[in-house]
Length: 299
Image (cartoon, rainbow, N blue to C red; front, side, top):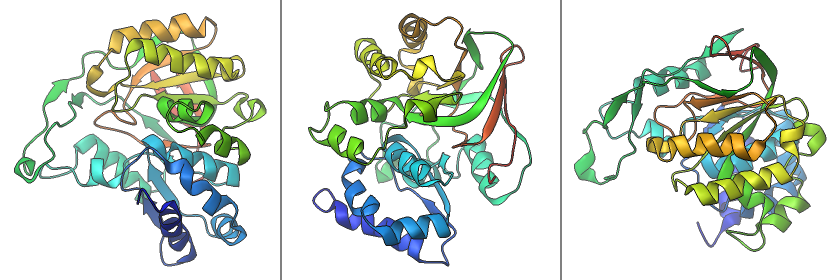
């Protein structure tokens, strides 16, 4: 797979060409999804298939690249469970909160709330066959949603992903050609596209140290999006690593005290996780600490 991004791109093409397939669940995230872009966005047949036969698409982490590609092509996707991390849970069943979220893919809701889980789980360190059937280490959620700054309510359509993926798109830190390829295909949304959006943002399993985290956040700041968005929804850091430090860095780096930020939301690399639907009109009530999707996730 490392040596053949064209084969990975073909898997996605085949899924869209097959009209019997209704949904696509990413296996996992990865770290070089950008290498599939030329094989996808230079293919008019693939673009036509996506736009004329849209499908449910779910995944997170480096899959941010796919989500932004589909956003560019005009279809909504879901920053949500993937196969290896969630459906292939080593315990006897999926984590209950994640399962309830996943089942929403099969239902229709005109309006829905994203509620805080009352339990959070540590990420596993043992993924061997010996771990099959064992439970995760769980903790009572003592904090719930935290308001870092802002008051009353803010609203907008959802757009975002993994902070490390954004950083890789905007720099050449991980791969020396990623920035150029993403710029060629216009993967990072323009400032006009970010205007009045709610940015959802979370950190990956690498658990970036505070110094690196601040550098990543500054890259987004320098891109100008904190000047145009309506607010930020921040995911729970995996294992609550650097939980308090990240809070301080958000407020210090963004500087704009009028920009609302709600923190510790269950999505992305946190366990358990909800689904965040791209492009859906959403309202966040900071006083009540409630996140409400104002239209069906399939709108």
